Image (cartoon, rainbow, N blue to C red; front, side, top):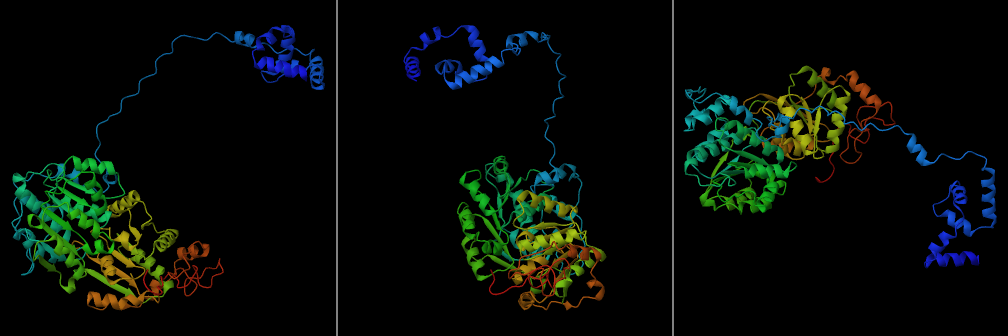
Length: 581
């Protein structure tokens, strides 16, 4: 042991070189290398010479001394065949990609100017004459009655397919075309979007020669509460400006590429359509300048108020010029005292107020049917309607996100292809669903109120209120998805034991009773696909106060212990207890 300690300190303090000279001959070293030990082991084995561990290792070496030695590594290397160093033939070069920009598809456009590519295919304005129009009643107002630019008239009459002005257009255009501020009470689907877009484009065409704006200073600004509404307004603007390719429209909203939208603004903008939050982000980054805005529009001001966007709207209007130097228009489903107080802050004194008559709160052409049905009769009626009526585009509304998902899954299990829209659906998927619904690739969408307000499709044939909404105004917004732009539509409601409490409030709001009827027996037959779906027992909703798919009165589920199907209470209903949450 003392010998080991002495050798250790010599090695540590410089005696290592002497120890190497005193090592055994190379032959003994080679024998020790045959034992697979750590690289430093040959020196340490000499240190332990004479110990039982060393003797046992020596005995093993003696027993293995008769075995053939492994060939040295150098021999293995020498045995390898010589490598062929001849140069390899060059690989055939791949054809270069065509980096020319491709025209955007409908999905890639994501709601910004999906009609812009069509402008190149439009016929020339040369030789086009304004048609006389057909006045079907003495009080009917035609677009030809206004001194509109021929390019606007042709887009409205031919591209948009309008024949005559809607009530809100007939009342608003005489004032807005004169540059007056206006507060309009109008529901979605009444043509209010075309009213303020025609006004914006007409003023732009009249004043553009004397315009001194920079490219990032828009001529007009439109604020919308939701991304979907902003996209729809931008699409309508593209259609109305179809024969004015120099008119640049940019839509900015959350959920999409931030830098890409900012690049679009920097390339020049005449009309910016925006949600408040995203526009404020660009204002903070100086990507857009609103000081030269000549026309400002607030659409669906009531929803702005409900969704808490009014502080953002106030901040945005702080970037605009004084009310006396611009025209301001505000549209809302209701013109309450609170909304008019807000309008007074942004408009010139004594703005024009336009309201649709009470009988036009709901768009004309809607056939309403309210079935007095129990919770277990709703799905059979829906399935019968889808099978026997011309249901080209159908919107089904539910009050809660999880109820939307449960109903969509049930319809899919019954062989009905559908999509669902709620706050949990990511933005890109929402845009894809909306575009598929607009083009007809998707026929049925199950949605909540917030998602449904962004659906602006002209030819929705059916709106089905699986649950009555909590507020009467929401009923008008839902039903307003159909019978748009002169089309006919049907609204189907279910007055069950869980959601009928809101019917008197709705009737007071629309100033007429809802037509309530009992479903015929053929509508109540449960199809085999629904029986099979229920038998699998895979559809359950929450068991709290929202209640659906329940024990009391719902479809029975033989595979579960529930007495009346789908879990909880209230069948497919959505029972509301206590104050609204």
